[in-house]
Length: 150
Image (cartoon, rainbow, N blue to C red; front, side, top):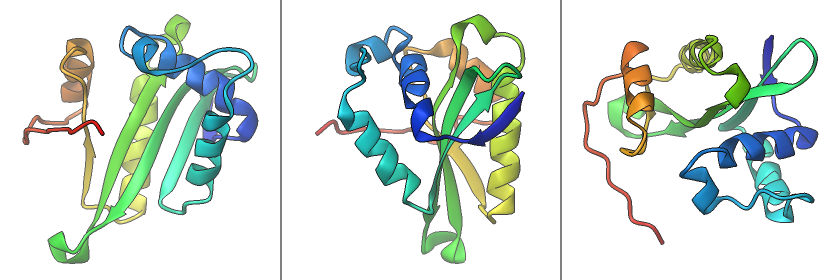
């Protein structure tokens, strides 16, 4: 298994994982062929030096996990950098095998390497199992998050 930067040809596998849960099914448009909006989004992510869309690839080449790591420069914390982790998914047949933990270990190491002072994430309250997983990794629910859907 290896963690590497995502390529354009990985996008269908990534979107499939993102769409493969009760919340993702409501907001994603996974079909064949995949709508071009996903490829346009990939191009925007790929061209931004503060964005890292990563995949976990099995030995046979199958994409079995993904995450997006964003680096956000701030004036707070004396001009610090926050790392934001989003869209963490593991292929359903590989869940419970430590893939998610390996993805997070990679993200934590990468955030440190980039000089981030904090690695943050949000999780939907409808995913209590994810919350327990993040707490097990050392994350704490230190803030109350809010969203305004536009």
